Image 1 (cartoon, rainbow, N blue to C red):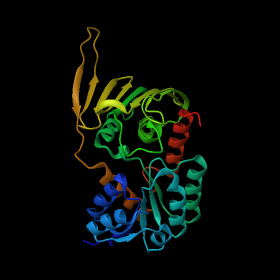
Image 2 (image 1 turned 90 degrees about the vertical axis):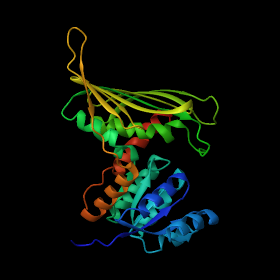
Image 3 (image 1 turned 135 degrees about the horizontal axis):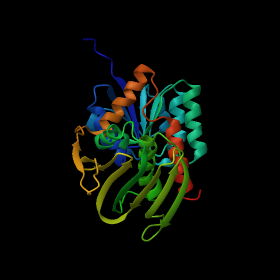
Image 4 (image 1 turned 45 degrees about the vertical axis):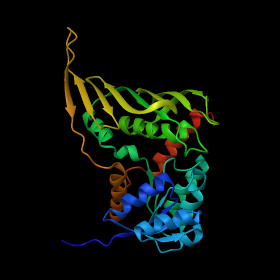
Length: 309
């Protein structure tokens, strides 16, 4: 069996999400975690030491450190500058969601990837949630009528620059596009700001190009976390808990009101590991990545429309 040389990987930005990427990448045979960048010296050093990687506090030095691939998990406003610099240096890039802070910045990343013939993938990790994959399988060949997603919980102390639409709803906008294989054409957002500087409660309604409708309920005011997905098609109703990964299909409704149910198998994979493996696969094969730069751009456009931006 031939052994494949691991790709030299760097992680830019080692806050909560970046640390997760570092942890998972270090345990993934496709990658050799060689570099960590964070402008905060002790943070960069601390994470680098755990994984035997080099620590950088300068983005330019990190970009020039001889990487094959990099994860960009910096604050959103730095995604484009960091990502473009890496792509221009010949490094494949996985950028955390949202792809960038603005549509223009997202386009810069897409253009840089094309110009330098490098892979650009967007980290929409819920695509790799086994429950979402199970729902996708369950509705294959079905016409989707509606999708309802609830993603609520307490206020996360780490949040600074964005509200719930960019932080949370971007996941669900992507799930809706992924499950329907259609684009969102109408948005009807209702936003409220109760405790935070940005919106912390949002009810978002969408109509898709193929006629399906969708609704996202998201907030930072619920004391406990809930992540649920419900999909109605002409023949079945599928309910998923994205945290427990339990998926149930309801079908065969009779005139007397009775119906059948069955559990849908969802495999116990770590979504972030699946995402990084998909990134490595795209790099090695040259195939279109699971979540493209264009996907990231569409998700961002919809989120910004919800915010009236």
